[in-house]
Structure formats: C-alpha cells, structure tokens
Image (cartoon, rainbow over the protein chains, first blue to last red):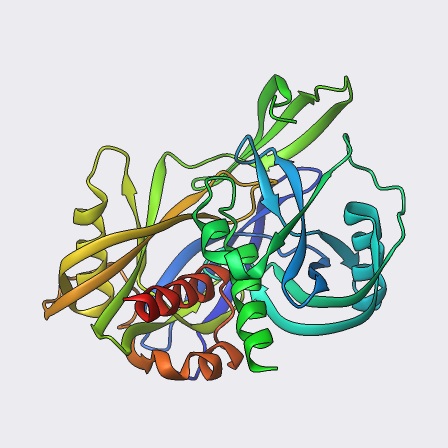
Length: 181
Length: 181
C-alpha cells in the first residue's frame, strides 16, 4: 500500500474567486479506477498561533464564522504566500488579530483539514514571550480577545462555541507539551 | 458581539456533483458590510469513531486521501442522512471500514472543520465493547487496519502520515477522558 494510486487526469470543473473544484481520475494499485472530486489546494499556506501569556494562559479570539453562521472562540490564524517566512506571517497575524507580537515561536505540527477532498495545510505555532503590539487588519469588526486557563481546558472544549478541530487539537497538543517541560 | 451579522443575501455561484460554492453578503452589527464565499453545507452529517479494543488500544485505518495525495493513518468515518440515528451510522461505517461493530457508543464532541467558510460538522464517537463484524463498503481498495497504543500517542502525532486535525483532536480528547475514568 506504500505505492500510491496513479492520477490519470485532473480537471478544474467549477471555480469562484476563492475556491476551485477539481475532478480527478485515479487508478489504485489493484487496478480499481475511481473519479473523485476535491477542492483545489490554494497557492497559500496557513498558520495558526497558540499565544501563551504564561505557562497556563492562552490568548484566544472571538470571531464570526460565515460557514457555521456563529461566533466561535478560536485561535488567531491567517494565510501567507509560499516563499514568505512562516514566522513573519505568524507574527503579523498575531498582531492583527490579537494585539500581540511574539519573541519566541516554535512549530508544533502541520495539520490538514480533510485529506479525502482538501489539500489545505496549516502550521500550528506556539507563540511565547509576547509583547503588546497591534497592526491594523482587514476584519469587519474588532475581534474580542479572550484569555483562558489551560488548567481549565476540559471546560473550554465542552463549550458550544469551541468546535474547530484544529483549535482543539492545537490546545491539547500545547497542554501535553507544557506538561513535559 | 452576541448579536450576529445579518445575512442580506446568499447565492450559489458554482457547483459540482458534490460541492457547492456560495457567495453571501453580510452586514455586521457595526454597519460594516462584506461579501464572503463559503462552501455550501452538505445535507448530510458526519460521524467519526474512536474504536477502543481496550483502554489503551485504538483501531485506526490507513487510507488514501485524494486531497493531500497521500496515505493517512486516520479514524473510520462516514456520512449519514439527517434523520438516520448516528449510532446506526457509526456502527455501519465501523463495520465497513474497520471490520468491527460496537456494543457501546458515546458522543464525545461535535467538531467543525473551518467555521469561516465551511458549515460541515462531524460527531466524534467513542466506540467500545467491540466485536468482529464486517460489512462490504464502497472503498476502491481494502483498508489496512492498524492498532495503536494510546500510551504512545505522542509518537503517533509526530508521524508525517498523521496530520488530520479532527483525528488528533479526537485521540487527545479520548486520552484525557480515559485518564479521568
């Protein structure tokens, strides 16, 4: 199973300003052929920050999600062009969305959303040694900045406005990492 | 911020067999207006299982993802129609993808993928008291079933073929839940 299916054909079948839908024709190593649909992988990468004020306090934001039509308690994140340093992108997005910069940043993990039909990838970055600094963003309304204690992480995850898999994965990975320090 | 933006207009601007792309026009409570794009929320819900053979052994599958063009070590999951009981759907998908049924199932959390542009939701289900039973699925090739020890979860998360945010969130939530039992 280490040998991958052969991609016989890929075709863009629908697109908008932001999204593209591709149809791809695959031949698996056992000879089976399938036609799948997937989202086109964007020519940008994503970065999501876990900003720590101290070893128990994480900085989150409250943001409207047009997909779920609800406000979510989430982590600052953004996109950056390939070629841009992810540290620069992380610091810029952190300043725009949360009003902090970070002197220390470390890459925890690169996450995917739904490998079956999305190639999207986002780097999860632990941001520490924070300092207050804001940059103007393109948000339609000012984001509410919320701090939360990692010692009360289970209570956070139970909340109805905390649902994003990437955010929950990032916070739980952070908690384990800090416990091992 | 508890009052949500008003959705002035929603329009389907592109579609394929599986996907739809919507444009929506929003007015935030401060009067700011924006035009966003999002994926159409599918008329089905998702279910993802964390099948436990015992308190330290989780059943995973190795599956090709056409989005990332790679094999991923992931958890069994599937879709079900609204109206169908999620327990029935969970048991069916578990039998199709992993060759097990579960006598005990509990809902841990409902996760979203990317609230900004997707309304997709998936129920994370802890599946216990397993028994061997297979159902034929529609997979193009037989899925490799892999067991992993939760006591070695950190090593699993470090793997390059374990990237899916929902899977990592589900396994870390399971680990915490079991530690509290």
